[in-house]
Amino acid sequence: MSTPLSFATKDEARTHVWDRLSNERLAAFPFPPHGRIPNFKGAGEAAKRLFDIPVFANATALKINPDSAQSAVRAEALRRGIDVYVPTPKLAGGFWRIAAAAVPHDAVRQAAAMSTMPKWATQVALQDLPQMDAIVSGSVAVTRSGKRCGKGAGYADREYGILLELGHAPVPVATTVHDVQLVDDFPQVGTDEPLTFIVTPSRCVEITSPPDAPDGIDWSDITDQDLEDMPVLADLKALIKA
Image (cartoon, rainbow, N blue to C red; front, side, top):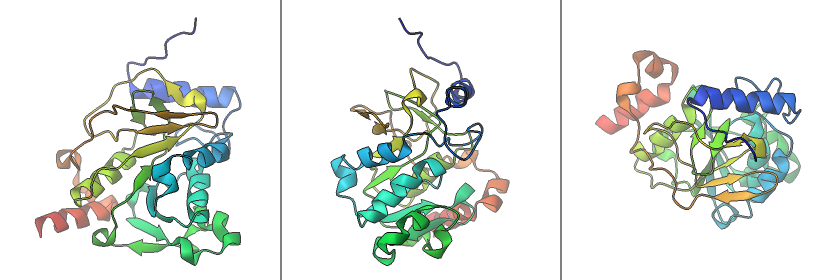
């Protein structure tokens, strides 16, 4: 009988996943997997499986995180003619748009890679962000009940909150992970982004009753330093007050 993988804190869940990916040589570049959204062997297969889900296969606009683990997801979306909206790392530069129609077929992988993405991306003002059909977020650990934890900075949760504050309708949220990133349980807070789909190289888990979604940004958690480091939050605050 397998040992239940329930953790008292998110940090414990993260450490378990990072260590297992490293020790079992399941991680992919960049190394080490610790301290980041880990890339993993089979990420390409997971990306293809994601687009077996109708809401992703039929999408015209997706928000996809900028991490290496989801580079194949961004490439597959562009290959299918789907416009990709990418939050810049640490939200320092707001959001980028990669228009699929502007990317030649042989340049899709370049447009999807963070190192060469700026050649193909244009910055998008908050008020010009369209309603997304769905969202893809990177994860460190996830549960079959739809809980997700990232590397601990909270960027994906804030990106989700930004869209809600802009009046966007809630949409399905998926993550692509290695099978060993699924654990049984860890704590959750009210601002956590809930998952609707967990896709691995071998399977797709649909969460029929995901955790409650947040209403938006928890402004009490936003510091003056956050507003300085992430100008997009200051822009959002100004839009809301306008």
